[in-house]
Amino acid sequence: MLIFRDFTPDNEARYLSIADEALGSGHFFSFSLHGEAYADKPPFYLWLVMLSRQLVGHHSMLALSMFSLLPAFGIVKVMNGWTRHSLSSAQRDLATLLLLTTAYFAGAAMVIRMDMLMCLFVVLALRSYWRLFTAPHSLHSEQWLMGLWLFMALFTKGPLGLLIPLVGSLVFTLFKHRLSDFGRLWNWRTWLVIIIGCAAWFYLTYREAGAGYLNNLVFHQTVGRGINSFHHARPFFYYLISIWYEWLPWSLLCVGGMVMVFARRLRLDAEHEFFLCMVLTTLVLLSCISSKLQIYLLPAFPFLIYLTTHILHLCEHERWVSWTLGIPETILVLTFPALLLAPHFVALPLLRLPLVMVATGVLSLFSLASLYWLVSRKSPVVSSQILAYGILATLFMAGWAMPVINPYIVK
Image (spheres, rainbow, N blue to C red):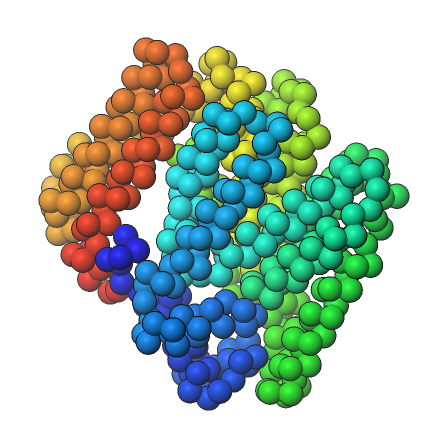
């Protein structure tokens, strides 16, 4: 897909235009789009787009996609290292498959956006927090690193890169009755890195673009979007609806697992309690912010999936697990038959493309195999693995069809 896909005309083409205008004007801290000031995003990701253009000589889909794909692999590596004592090797392999095939995580790994890169920095910052939380004494090097990761998250996407780790770790510290340790966990070294980084960023922005642009960047784009959004305003319950398709095909399993933690009072170790806390606080925090997009929830995905893998291990042979896997697998088995019937109801030539039909056929076959292992062999783990491989195989096959799909994307 990354070889054959074209740029989308809304988000991706916009970032390319902003980078081109910045290169043409020689600006590095203030940006414009079609001559109008564009203070929506911090500069770091746009710098990467500009650097790619200079190195490759043009905007390369494959090169630019690496700024999303490699961070996705980096998140997997960090999470696997983080959970090496709480999950077995086989469980970490399963978590890797589940995460990389979760709908919006897979999508974010293939599109040109800064969200996956920010998610990596958030995960790194929270790993540093966890090391500080579990250490009997202060780790000065980890405090500096935590500040660096938090600033880079902020410098990549904006305030959410700082707010999500801050609120999530604060709630967990309160939950564990260790509020007195919060000063050690969020030490002056951490804050010093963030303050110095922001001060340098804001000063250089002021020097380049003046007070008006800086005010737009710091206040209008943060406070304005947070309280009374002028872009993407959504109701409070927005994410309670979106998670069902964002977490596909594992959404029933993930939500069911979290419900069972409370309904059955499952005993989780401290590490997985922290993961659960991060998922729930991220959902609540983002629900309280006026501006909402599905992709904003991305930092919760790694913690959700690794928590779900642990719960699956605890409850593997319970009936609710079979239902939460069997329902989406049954629906996916029907994708190929549905595609054969669709042209009778929808006039879309895309559905008749041979490679599209092959891709959906692959998905149906893998889904049928996963359903067999779930129902006949009573193995939810193997069933999940087969479905995950089927999704990856489907994406691979669909990638070959991208040259003929692209005209439908760019319309």
